[in-house]
Length: 382
Image (cartoon, rainbow, N blue to C red; front, side, top):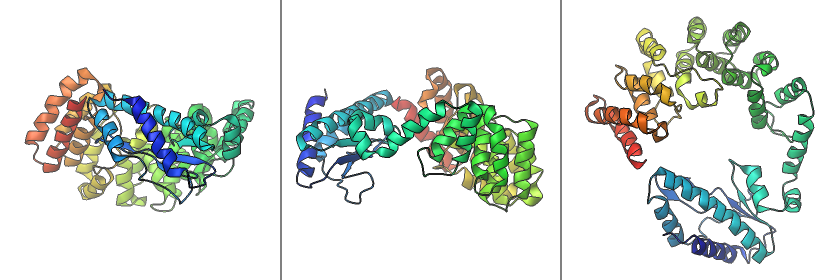
């Protein structure tokens, strides 16, 4: 059984030893790394997250190897549980090392940035070291007191902005949360070159394909500079709203790349942000490849393995299984990859694993066979 108390104590000792003589006013533990291929590393150390004076070889190798071995000793659920416990241990190490060093020590977790800082530091330390965090919290309180329409106007004004207390990413999340109420604030931005792609992406994510939205996106495609973000993102948005036909109707104004970007959009990870994603359906892609065979290389590039694919729901397994038998290699590659997700559940696995094994053995394309075999391995780890 893994000795977490010993791990925590020895890692804390190593941290204190490493930085004791560096005279840093604070210590940041930055970006602990892990991947499901089976490697866990210690975070970098620095006097701040932005510092160029980073230390990356401070943790005892044997200690991190033991942690990795423990994480890899079970299935994926065990891996996830070990990573959660590892982060909790790092937070406790921050407290213990801070007491011994007499300076603030904190963990930077970019996925839960402010929450993790609050776990590691006192309110006074947060205010001293991260005044922008305090300012953002105060601004959120102020915004919460405004009427929804005023909040939407404010958040729309922050798109593309990374100065001030509320940055573009937070504004996008807020606007997505307002749903259809945000549409009137987004439509005018489609005519602004520097904001059009934000607006198009959010309109796709909100997922309301009403006539005003479709007309505005089609106009943006027609009037924007060829192959600019202001044109490509409305193309993606129309396809993700289930209206690839409107993109194809503007074929004469579009490059082959733009057509490929549009037809591939519903199959990429951008779909995962959609409030109401359209169900997985390979038929429009297959029809496109028949109609535009010369665009096949561009589509293959857009959907090349290694690009981020959409995550599918259990209700979409049937269409993905159908895709494994598609005559188009690009469809088969996508299908065998998205089916390699054990989170689809045991019932799906009983249907999926035999299909993937058959593809791994007999698909005419060697890359499809390789990808299908990898997906089988992911299911076996679960």
